[in-house]
Image 1: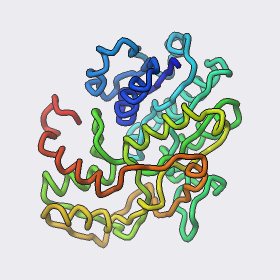
Image 2: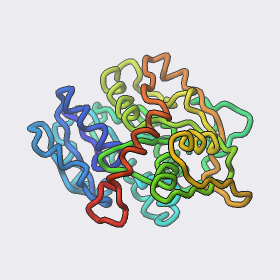
Image 3: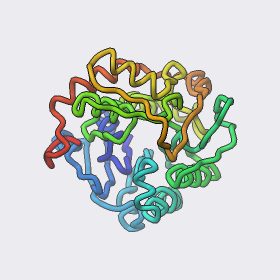
Image 4: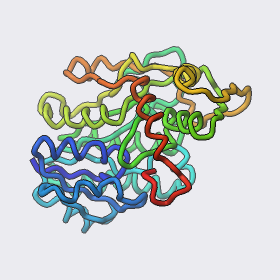
Length: 309
């Protein structure tokens, strides 16, 4: 198949696209390169890889990118509450309006697989979140993703995947993700201060996110026109538990602060029965991801503009 990946130069795209190419698919990436494109460099020698530089909000560029496409994997977004809080209008324009434009511009026979988020649930206390749980996002990121998801689910030929919190190594590394950040602080700074230590969330390795998209492509008719939580109950951990896993492996100063607040307020457990019943399960544990992050920190230097961050 010929697959369009919007936002393919990002953290998830750089893990996903090599898998798609290995499976024999042709891949076209549409990306504005707002965060650069070095993570895609190894792919340009592949004869089935194509890159278009453009913005998801540009209708003409969208039309060009959709030519001959069999399926769309929609990753393009301003991701995470800090980035969305910094540029709220940009987040609204890309996360919601860009998704609406993509949905309206495509041929509706062409499926869209959408990268949604567990942030859509907001703060859920004493309840295990299932796909039918009422969505109550607290941040601009969660609200724009929820609005985009709702729009897509009123259309046909769509799959929305509410991912757990990502972690792990990708060619376009993000250090603003909780586990990645904790490992960076512990390994490079030797100092980690944590507030709301008891707050829990589930996690998913970025390569398992890529595998989830592969699963959706391979089993599209079975899972289409529905919403899925994507992750594993085995990786529901508190901030404190993540920090202690890291501390088992490296020595650093760890302090649990009494003050401080995460605006996203994610503190909940999620049920992943629906996606596992369909046939998908994660493969990489938090501890395995921490091990690879610790090893990778030796080559990461955020002060160097040519680093992989």
